[in-house]
Image (tube, rainbow, N blue to C red; front, side):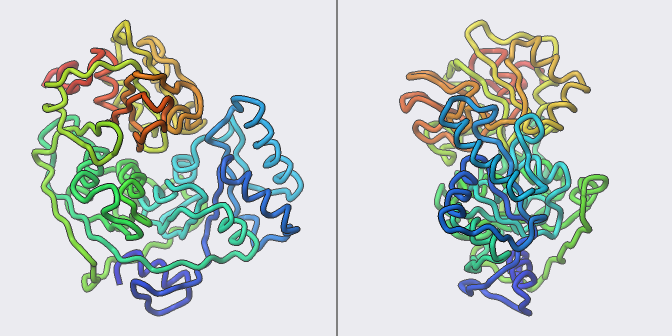
Length: 423
């Protein structure tokens, strides 16, 4: 069995599963955010359900509209706070104490290698970056899982994606690997399938790089992404994991529905044009078009981990944003925000001209803290650039890695970081 099949078989108490099988699994972590949990709470209240299988597996992270931006979101989150207080739930992460769930939970050791995770948010696939099975579910599904401790799932087919080589370009990163993959297979190229990553280029990535790639599995339509347990993940978990790790071994006889292989030696930083992640182009081509930007956003569950912020700060240090550029930087969690303060990263961002805040999704979903207006261009380290997602439907969002974002903020046009930092 491949990795996804091994995880689902183990959780379902079966010796073997195959694609298409319906299995009932017992997740280790069942997560909701402020937007989705509000619906879950309403469903539970209307159904009169108030007994839960295991409160220690219930996680609620306030991430999308916090601190509350208006009366409507205040009312929405108030219902969740009352629910948490009533049931004395132990894992509730409020504004200022949490952040974006997909960065917070692995970074602080609540999700660990070997876990089975379901989350009421499409980017719950992120946790696969540290060798977990993780998939998004709906708010109604979350209600059922909280009450029963179980959920049924169809075993997906698995795509094998192998990346080889070491990029020659000094600023090519994990984000560029996944943008390239989506460009190659399409925005729906992995619909309800797992993507299992292999190859020496993958082994050379940090765990944070793997989390970035796993985060965007849903942008190819995938059910989940998963990585083999390796030294990078093991090192990441040391000092973080709050529970014992429970990895599985790669089975050399595992079958895959399809296999792809790419050599990344010549892969440049990628930029996805509006309005799909699959519209990725190499930075050399993008620069020829001289695309002027109005706002640069460094944040989101994709690229606002401490590693990402360090990369951007390296480029921004001692520099200023172009006069017409607005900069918005949002570290992905309160812990990461504090680390960035202690390392001087927040000061670098602020002196460059960025508005910096902590632990919220911000303009990624057009929430607040920097949504764009009609005709405006935003360059973003987030995961989606759909029509109207980041603000006005006539706004345009381009996706890139943190290095490209930082360099472009300085120049005012989308550029190769080498233009700012030299070769």
